[in-house]
Image (cartoon, rainbow over all chains, first blue to last red; front, side, top):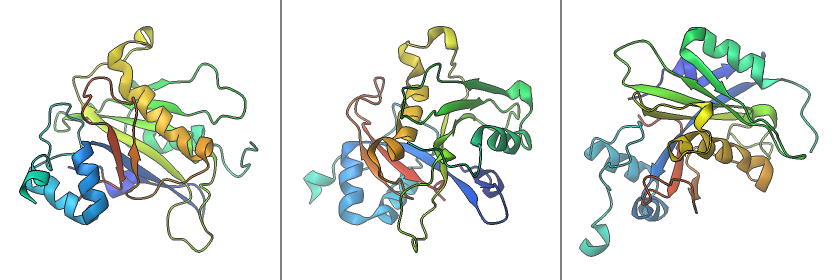
Amino acid sequence: MTLPEIFVNIAINDKEKVYIFSVVPLYPEELKFKISNGVGDLVEKFNEFNIEEIVDVDRKNTCKNLDKLS
Amino acid sequence: MEQEDFYEPIETIHNHISQFFGEDELTVFQQSTTPEGENQVDICWIRPKDPDLPYSILLTIGVSRYYQKIEKDSKHPRLIELAMLVPKEWDFHESKWDALEMWPIHHLSNIGKIPTRNNIWLGLVTPLFGKQINPISLEQISILLSSFLR
């Protein structure tokens, strides 16, 4: 799930571009996980749980039980 | 706060969006008043007619009015706007500006003001600790900025 590359890059002149960033709400546990493990691992978690970029207020917390496991 | 004079985002970004979507797919929520010294960040709500797209897009217009204050040699983008994909059935209307369901509009606009308000820059994966940013999904309180997960 993604917006096309051509949409998220806006050339405003020969030199400069505006980049569109996606805002993704996280659970606190996911933020903690990202800080400890880096964003790559968090994205892997998102893929594992099939989390898409569309905001879902009831989506699964991909890092909910990690504290208990470690 | 002095405005950069190189570029006006409203026209440029509107032109950009118009390459992909028709006028009847767009609604712009404008800030009615902007306190002095604060950047104006409007939100364009894009509702694609394409039935294959299961989302609508909220896109900021105005964050890129100012350069982000990053180091000169940094590869991080100096000019950004923010987008949030929301379910297609979510409905936004100016008449219910203060209603709970308008939170994504206010939320995105507030995040967009962070670089100028707090004099920091937002990067590819800047996690923001939120206090009261999402009144509906209370548990999802933090925000990750990414250049669209792949």
